[in-house]
Every structure is written in C-alpha cells, then in structure tokens.
Image (tube, rainbow, N blue to C red; front, side):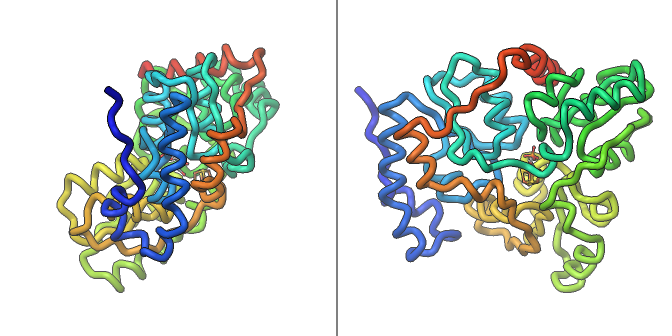
Length: 324
Ligand code: 13P
Ligand code: SF4
C-alpha cells in the first residue's frame, strides 16, 4: 500500500519558528501540489543548504552541501531530479545521471564563481604551468570541469589537493578558497581571481564588531570568505561542516558567516540556539521558489542538457573527486 502523503498543514509545525503564519499562507497550495506531483512523476528534489526553509524542510527529499548533493545524486532512484540550487549543481547531477531528466526551476540561477572562468582560461593556465595538475571547484560549468584533472568542493578541497601527490597544484577559480587551503598544506597552490559575490562582502571588521555586540558568540565562516575573515572565525568549513559543528559543539549563540537561509534552516533543527545574522543573500539561490519548482514538475522546466563532447571528461573529473 502506498503511504499517505504529508499535507502542507501537517508540515507547518516544523518551520513555524522561522516562517510567520502570514507568509506560510502563500505556500500551502504549492507544497501540496509539489508533493503530489513528485509521487506521480517518480521525482526527487535535491536542495542545497542555502534554499529557503519552505523548500528545504517541506518539499526536499535530499539536502546538503555541494559534496553531499553530488554523492547522493549518484544513488538517486527516480525518473526525474529537480535541483533546488544553482545551475552548476544541476549540471553535476546530470553528469552523474545522464539518462535521467534533470530540471532546474530557473535557468538564471548561476554563480559568480562559475562565471569567473572559461574553458579557454583553463587551457591557458595549463600552457603557463605545464604538467601542474588542475583542481577545479565544483562551482564551475561542465565545460570548465571537462578541462580539469579533478574537481573539489569546499568540503573536500584539502583532501583532493593532497591526494594528487604533487608539489604544485592549480586550483580554480576561487582565489579565497585556494588561499584558505594553501594555509593548511605544504602543497604550493596557484590560484585564479574568481570570487563568490556573497562571501567576498564579509570583512574581518564585521566579525570583530559582531564579537563586541554579542559576547561569547561562536563564529563559523565559509572558506569562500577572504582569508582575513576566516582568520577571525572560530571554525571554517563547508555548509555541511558548519551544520555539523553547530550540532556537535554545544554553542548557545552562533553567527554563520555565509548565506542567510543557512541560519533559518539550522534554527529549525536547533531552536535552543540563538543565531545572530550578519548574513548575505545569494541572488542566484533565491531565484528558486516553490512556484517555479511546481512549474518544473508540471512542464519539465528547465531541462538541463550537456554537450555530449564534454560529458565524458567532465564526469571523470567529478568521479575522481568522489573517489577521494
Ligand atoms: P558548499 O559546498 O559548502 O555547500 O558551498 C556551496 C556554495 O555555493 C557556497 O557558496
Ligand atoms: Fe555561487 Fe556564492 Fe551563490 Fe554559492 S553563494 S552559488 S558560490 S554566488
């Protein structure tokens, strides 16, 4: 017998601490329709940690950081994958599931890091540094991944760099992630000039002011932040690593130096923690809404396709990363 679907009304208890009733009133119908269509179409929704709580906690089947989404995308047993996140994440899911329909609800959900580098740029770096392996952050297009030896995420970048056994590594395109990793390894890192438009805005002074205003606050930063920001934090790690830290260290007041929805999603799981929010919004992540997730499931909008010429090499770079 098929299990009964949860209703939007029954899900509200989960998120009432972060979604006021007035706002929730606009979500109920879309949530019920999405839950029904997911079952009808044998679809799953993968949602990144930066998605808003009504998506993250009410319609998503699989949630996590970029690494977890890539790993779990490999094992998805469904006909359709809807990626509630940004375009490079949907491309990664498609690379790992070439025979499934992968949908991104808004094609404009990009990423300033992915936009900062082209395949031609990678080829030029190889010419400039012959024989030096190229590690590419997953926040890049499939075409850029296809030019790389191996991918990494913020969750495994150090392990990936050290797995290569090389004295020098080219790490593209996030300059700050590269510098933050360089501070933890003896491998020489050659970086690029890409930045995350969300994390580059945080400053070391922001953190010092925060500590003055909220004594005892535990500060967790994403490694896409500038190194001087990471130096002021108590811990730096991927969105999943920050989430684990919050669960394991018994902090009572936490500031997440990252995208705003992360605090909302963690506040649902940890109502006992006071999250202070010097956050920045990612305009790309915020393009994904319940309304366009519903439209994606109703009308296959927008199907992610990848040039057949680059699928093989791009997939190899992602699979090599997943094997580390
Ligand atoms: P994570 O891999 O840590 O989830 O980061 C993805 C991202 O886009 C951060 O800005
Ligand atoms: Fe890209 Fe930054 Fe947005 Fe993450 S937060 S998707 S790195 S622009």
